[in-house]
Length: 475
Image 1 (cartoon, rainbow, N blue to C red):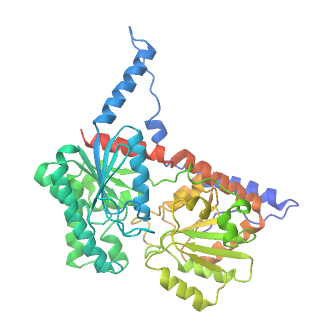
Image 2 (image 1 turned 90 degrees about the vertical axis):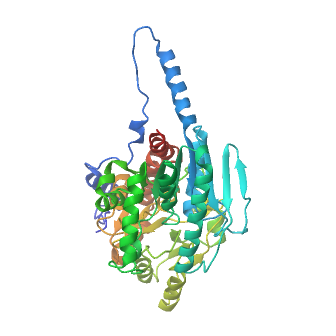
Image 3 (image 1 turned 45 degrees about the horizontal axis):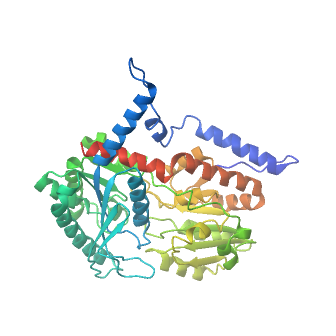
C-alpha cells in the first residue's frame, strides 16, 4: 500500500493535495515512537547542592566527562576503509572522525583498497590527526566471485586476530564489524585467549542472508555451524550494535540471552557534506541532461538484497512520459539489470558508475526523487545505508519494501515520501506522476527529508550513541 493523498477535485488541487499529505502523514505517525532517543540521553542534567555553585558543578561534570572520554581507547576492525568507496568504509571513516573530535583515543585496522577509484595501494601506517590507521596486506583471490570473497575475508580475519593479539594492551575495547561477515570471530578468539573486550557491529546478518538468497540451504551443516558461532561470539561480546529495530528482533530471536546487549544505532548522512542544490545550478545534472526532466535516482549498491525488478517495471509504465531514471553504482545485480533494461526496450534509463565522495553532493541532488529498495523477506537482515544521504539531499524518498519493514515507520514519521510493496510498480508509477505534476508537494517532502535527518541521523548524534556503547563496554 502506498501512502499519499488522493487527487483533489477542488479548484486548487495543489494546495489540497499538500494539505491532504500533511493530514494523512499525521494520522500515520500518531503514536509512533521516536527513532532516536539520543537527545534525551545527552540532555544536560541540572544539579543542586549545598556549598556548590552551579558553575562549579558544571565544570566538574565537564572535567569528569573529558576524563571518561580519554579513558576510552578504541580499535576499529573493518576490511573496508577509504580510499575504498564501499559504503561501510566511508561510514566508518566519518564515525572515526566524530569519535576523535569527542576525545576518544582511536585506531583503525583495515585492508588495502579493494574498491578504490585510482589506487590499489595505500600506506601501511597512516596518521590523520590523532587517528592512526593500520592496513594489512591484501589478498584478492577471485574477488569478483562469492567463494573468492569468502577466502579473502577469512584471510583478513586471521590477520585481524593477530593484530588484536599484538596490540591488546594499547586498547581497552575493540569494535569489530561484520565486514567480512565472520570478522567478529577474531574478537571472540582474542577474548578467549586474553579476555579482551569487544563490541560487534552487524551490518548484514549471516548466514540468514545466504539462506534467503539460496546460496546455502537452511539445513546445510555450514548454516548450523555459523549460527552456533554467532551465538558464541554474541554471548562473549560486551555489546552488539545493529542498524534497525528489525535486525534487533532477529538477533534476539536467534540468541535471546543477549537481549540486554543489543543496541539499535542507525546509519547517518552528513548534512554538511550533502546540501540541497537546485538542479538548475547543479553541474552534474547539467552534464547528464537531467535539468529539464523529472529524475528518479537510485544511488548505491545494486546487490542481491535489493529489489531492482520493481524499478524496471515502473520505468516500463513511464517509458512514454518525461521521466528519467538514473542508476549510480555497482553490485551483483548491475550487469543483469542493465541487460534486462536493454532487452525491455526502455530508453529512459541512465547507468553511471560509483562517484567519488567529492561528487556525491552533486550526484545525490541531481534528481527529484530518491529510491531505496529492499527485497521482500530481507527487512530484518539488511539496512540500506543509502537512505540517510538521500534524506540529507532534501529530496522525497520512495522506499520499495515489504509491509513489515521498519522503513515504513521511518518514512511515515519523517513525512518525507512513501513506501510501496515489492512488485507494486503501479503504485510507484502513480507516486512519480503525482510528484511530477505537483512540485509544491515534492518540495514539501524534500524539506521534511532533510529536517528529519538533521533531527535524528547526523554524524554527531549517531557518534554519541556509539560512544555510549563503547564507554559502557570497556568498564
